[in-house]
Length: 189
Image 1 (cartoon, rainbow, N blue to C red):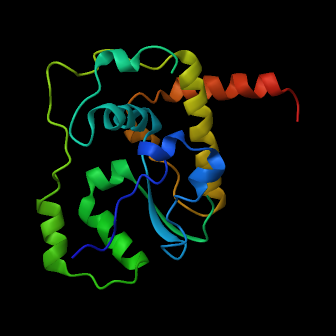
Image 2 (image 1 turned 120 degrees about the horizontal axis):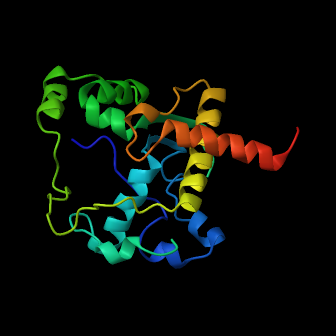
Image 3 (image 1 turned 120 degrees about the vertical axis):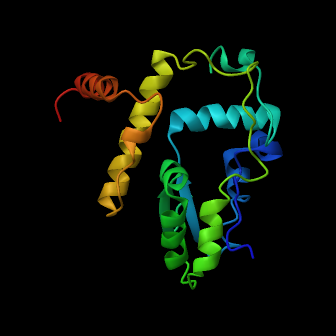
């Protein structure tokens, strides 16, 4: 039985070519009674994964050359984090089931824990691994700023903060320095 359907909303396919106003009509929220589960992932890894999805589909890879160069509100959401789902799929699924007011079936939950790999999984490849950090300092600064913004909003709403210690490419010292420099540029408040 399927209880949730994964969606990238308007971030993939033909919808990417639409204007922002047109893309908002493709977000599925009215069809879902403005209810959903949001999975938040380390944005550094999400950017890499999304590039692979755009170019290589659900199971393929984008070539190295595609990593070089320049690179809606709702009332009732459950927040989970990709890294926590990978680390503890059973525990995170229990939280999702509780949010959806669905009965926990221990047998099915055990099955989730035993079968964590699905059909849409990229196989390791010696030809495509990123053996370099594809993020320029400018892009890292943008991602750090976005992380800070999301973390602040989550905490204001009484949600758990982002699991930054689990984020690849995230450098706590670099993020703190970027935050400091951003505050200096803005000047006294």
